[in-house]
Image (cartoon, rainbow, N blue to C red):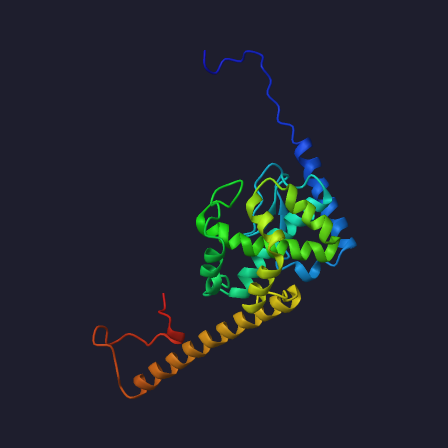
Length: 242
């Protein structure tokens, strides 16, 4: 009978999940002490979700998969940071891969567009040629090219992509260099540039709002009034009072 207490006890034990999360945090902390990761950390907010997926946005999230060794954890972390690098490099209205996306398609017209050989879609497969190339390059700077390539050769997903970026390192390097993606801009410099861009945008919006307010004030001083509501007081700063 539903709802009857039949003596079954069900417990939830999060101990293993906590231990796995702590392992990843300990390893990542050790990697940050051992290597100069700051220049590749294009986001400074990282969270660990045991048994969850790994992804870059909106918060760089590390699951417990792809973290079995320190080298694999490092490469996984760098991979997600490279997504942030492209996001910051392009800005909200520009995709930095778009100018040479067709070049990638022409170079690799038969690229697989499904896991585990490719990525999850046609577009993501070609974008990941860039992301994975940058990841391997960053890892090679930190742990050497042999170890970085070994991780790329043994990863579960993006198999064709990793084989391609390792085999075609030089021509892809030339392509990314031509379009300004490489050498990579150090994270502190790019983050500062993005902050300055946002401040400039906010300042421009404030100035536009102030100018609009001054124009309305000038019209009001000349006796201009709303036909719809002749007794309404002009709003301040371009916003209606409520």
